[in-house]
Image (cartoon, rainbow over all chains, first blue to last red; front, side):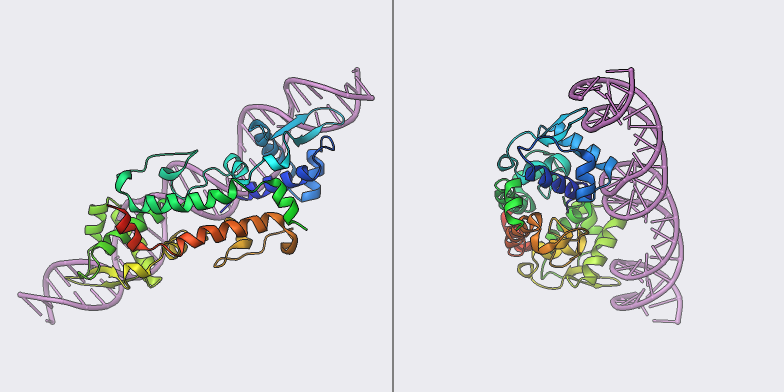
Length: 138
Length: 138
DNA sequence: TAACAATCCTACCAATTTGGTAGGGAATAA
DNA sequence: TTATTCCCTACCAAATTGGTAGGATTGTTA
């Protein structure tokens, strides 16, 4: 399951996607509008910025905005930044690979099943973007 | 990601699947053979039994064995019993549904994306069984 | 029926992760 | 030069994870 933090991230990003091209949005605005704890949201937005999904501006008239179009931010990217691996096992993860103990990867049946599962999941999550969230939310 | 406990469960179940039809297997045997902490494995097997996947026999000649054929135990079932929900959001889970705060489900774009993802994932996990793990492990 | 062999049950524990809060520092615009 | 806004470090409580300990219970067999 996605952490609450990740859900907050998605909600904030949807809001920013909605305001794409309209200039920076205040953290406090997103927080109150989307009902997210302010200081917690600060961390989240900062992480998203470090991951190059957002840009920020300080001082009056500042705030956060998407760095690229909502169509170019996939759900998979967001999940990886805030939540971590998408695969169900470390030994199957593309971005967070770790060898698992006592398992010959070439002959691990579970690993093969989890690879198939990962591919099916990624096929969706890599393709769907923030834009799709907006469009689906009618 | 699946918990270590769930990985242990799969390893133990694979072993039992391998020995399906050959009578009960000792916890201690599975533990040493699959390198799983003995007392921890006790809990796991007991949970799987309560979920009706295993049957047990006490006393000499006792142990655990699969209650049904390996072909009839899906990966989804095992994950749900030991790991919990498969969906990425509680509001999208079939077996562990919970409403999420501040979200109109009819118009939640994220929810729709996560429903699609869940369906893609379940299509694999509901279909693949312990038997498929064995077959894939050549 | 006693002894033994196995699972079952309850309780506990340390380490890690999750979901935050507090308080001030640094940059920028008017 | 002051107000505004993001940025950074540190801390914290509660929940979860990954176990361990010790005995109770049930069944088998001599």
